[in-house]
Amino acid sequence: MRRGITLEKIEKEIERLTPQEQLKLVERLAHQLRKTGLTMKKELSWNKLYGLGKGLWKGEDAQEYVNRLREDRI
Image (tube, rainbow, N blue to C red; front, side, top):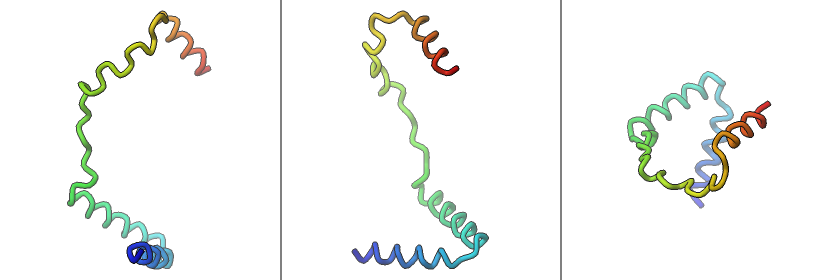
């Protein structure tokens, strides 16, 4: 619970800052997170996706499926 109370206090203090100060704070936080590696993109493994849609379009003509998708966009 102590952590929640601390976050509430911090949020209230942030509300008192000017928009420019808030932006500067966000930039500093983003920089800090980048340094710690929390925002690093994870590599997507296409091998893990292989076969996920198996049977999804079973018995459906590929061109008919594409045509239907295009009609839905209009």
